[in-house]
Image (cartoon, rainbow, N blue to C red):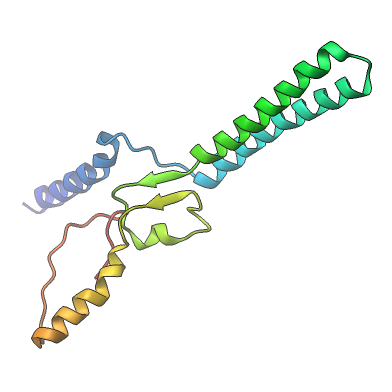
Length: 146
């Protein structure tokens, strides 16, 4: 029975970890992806600037207009890419995600679970409770301790 209990616990833990995969969530290093995307957009912008400089330095009237428009489109593209590189989460409420250095592109529309602690404390004090029991589901990333 001891082996079965341990195996059942491992299966339960495995299922909780697979839940994120079933939701289609991919976890990766945000900073690395953002750095590479920024380098890609910067290289495109630099190429457009070099082409625009070449066209203005030479006597290429036909190319000047085209390069100017390409440069404008490149700058527009980089500003649009910057707008969509932000991430919005509808469910992540862990205190861990409040680290602005690590998750600098993450925006959430729900408060952290620790934001409710002040309300919980006020409720306990209002009713004068001496003992409180808290039931919760264990999930590493989406919940924190009360």
